[in-house]
Length: 187
Image (cartoon, rainbow, N blue to C red; front, side, top):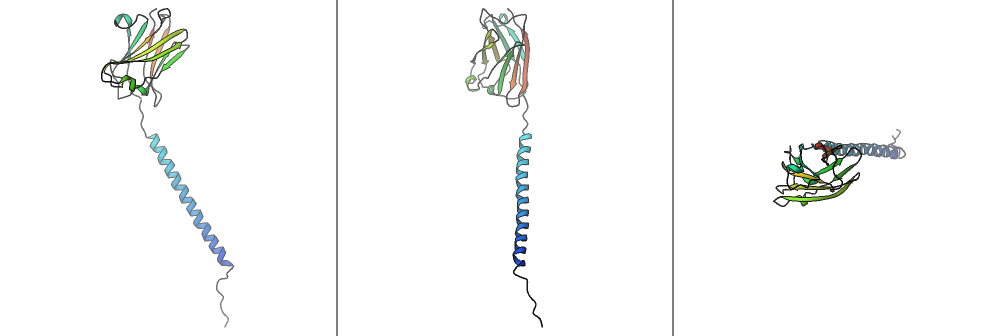
């Protein structure tokens, strides 16, 4: 009787390397799927963060209606806000149609538990030098109804009645418009 030969030792490494390749391929696919799932969950988590722009309105208060404002100033008064927002989440923009300037109010400088004013500084709007002063009437670090933005020019170069100026308040986290108001100067 003839002896049966077992598997040849030459075939054994081929089986092992094929098995190793299959395991490696399956492992690579599993790793790729896990990484894809992680990336997808991060993307979904970011897109589901529902950032909504708070809404408010602005009204114009001329210097003759408010005795503490210099005659060459414009005061903008906030109405109520649709939700909580910090001053530092906002950007104030002013445009004359050809030029624009902006100010970034801080939350810390506008808190303190009582009426607080903060000078945001002078900016050049064309030939005008405009000073922005923000008043938080309750000093809570967030804009509320009655808080104001006062825009003051030099006495010799004021907001012109013949120009239309556009004031906008932008919500920085999403770039949305909180409120805006167009006005003419009073020269």
